[in-house]
Every structure is written in structure tokens, then in C-alpha cells.
Amino acid sequence: MSETVLDEWQIALTQKKSELESCQNEKNLSSCMKCEKLLECEIRDAYIKAVYDSMSKGVGGGFEF
Image (cartoon, rainbow, N blue to C red; front, side):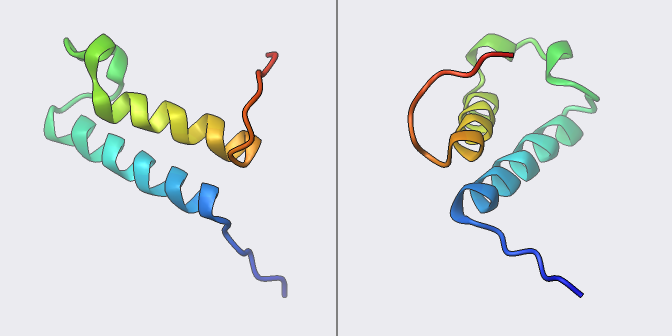
């Protein structure tokens, strides 16, 4: 049985995802795309930053998709 160890970047991502989902639930939205504050939302911006940080482990750089 292997145990999954979360690093600080995964922990931060999980926390920001939870905050984002809570906001969506409070507003009865299934997606941020339906929110009138989409482009100025600090919660969403923090979540996106946490996603990139978790991918790069805090080391800057670009991503190609």
C-alpha cells in the first residue's frame, strides 16, 4: 500500500480549489464562466496561480499546451 504525500504546492492547490468551489456553490454556479465577476475575481486568479505553481513547483517558466 503506497501513501500519497502532498507537497506544499498540491496543498495550496487543494485549498484554492476548495475556495473556488465554495464561491461557485454560494452563487449557484457550475462554472466561473457564468459569473459576472469572471475577469476581476481574486478567488479565481488565486486558483489559476495555484494551478501553475503546482505544475512548476514554484519555479517560474512558461507552459506550452
